[in-house]
Length: 270
Length: 278
Ligand SMILES: Nc1ncnc2c1ncn2[C@@H]1O[C@H](COP(=O)(O)OP(=O)(O)O)[C@@H](O)[C@H]1O
Ligand SMILES: [Mg+2]
Image 1 (tube, chains in turn blue, red):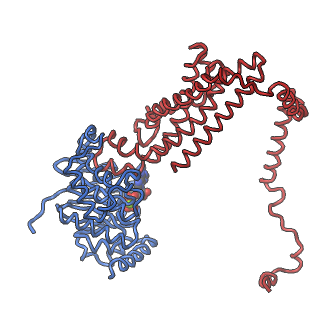
Image 2 (image 1 turned 90 degrees about the vertical axis):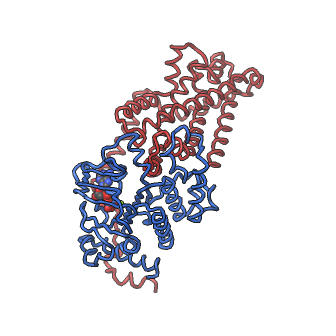
Image 3 (image 1 turned 90 degrees about the horizontal axis):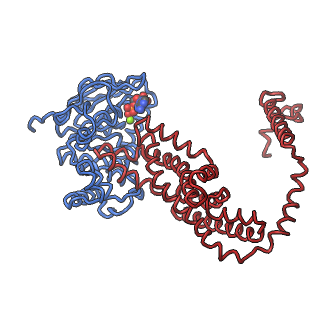
């Protein structure tokens, strides 16, 4: 494979909440097509980190270079435009429950269209066709007129994936996308996300607390502990000792981790 | 023996002892007696200050019943035809006031919600304004507005709309704020504009709460529009009041019965609609 271009360059990223410094200077460069999984104990700052990238959280310090601009400095319309090129998937799916499935998917186009065009719900034929194709691909072709809140958790997350893909993003962010799902649905979701981002050469940054799942899918793993990057490298190089170090002092987290290895075994028949 | 294991551990001398469920003379106990004493003193003081003999309250119901039986029955059915326009008027008061305030309160609700309105100064301003509207009873708005506009329907309408706005804006704001957390987060993250988020995210999610609160306030407004007439703000209350002043008690009793019927029908219909929605 040819040397990929840098897509995202984060330098000295810091975030402080009133007194507490949650991110203590993070430097990371992400290349096109990378599948990066961020691991670390809860409270380490993983969600804060991922949310700084699309400015759902405003960083206190640092630069986030994406698409030729520093996202950290953007405001108003320019910020919305940057966001429209970054997809996001959430732990709780965050769908509009009383709206049907295909409309939820088309919400991914709102950022690319003007208010008046979307007011009447008139999306272009190409957009509607793309929405349907995506839904069929994730196995929801028969449910497009169902209200989103009538779906199961796994189905909701698949709608979330389609909505993010509708944005035609260059970067996909995912904050614990399988944390609320049973092992079986979790595997389906991981496979679908992995399949779609690989096929479309979308870079992905995903927070997970299942180390085994991270190792199975990631091209690169980043370990965050107490607001700092403590591991950045290939999944294969992440040893048990390093994992123990990342989760050090978090007894219940270690338990959680072993649980999730068990979950991994269940789901993947390891 | 079912309880053998239990009995074996009890020393015989302890078996007859009464076990108190609270410590005697504990601070909680003293506080309870102080509270009871205080409330009793307050009741006695109230009767003394109002110079009302408590026994009069006991004899009041028979007096009321005798008076009503003598003067209110049988109700005068002839008045029904004459007062029909006013009855309909009362209903429309409630309809218009509810409608208008539902629309205005939608905007005020957005402005009052922390998650939908980031301008703290504007938010606080609207909150105080709405609290002011809400905390003045509708009957006081009515008597106030009668001075400004004179006796008539417009007074009842404005008074009712103001009071409803006060109630609905706050209720809407709370429901909206619940919705505006995680549920709208994905839309923000995808670069949708504020107006797009309101139209495609907030409104569909808010719809059930919107209908629910609005129907509830309609029910309140039917009652209130009858009361408002007492201060000359139009509607049925005004008619009841004038019949009473003319000592046409049998006409008044007919009107009161119609009013109660109207309130019951509204209550029933609104209850039915609200159950159907959820
Ligand atoms: N809005 C907030 N205000 C104050 N503190 C916060 C806020 N969000 C997160 N934090 C704190 O920041 C730390 C990191 O949180 P988070 O990024 O959610 O960690 P993780 O996703 O790794 O579990 C935690 O200690 C959390 O309590
Ligand atoms: Mg988190």
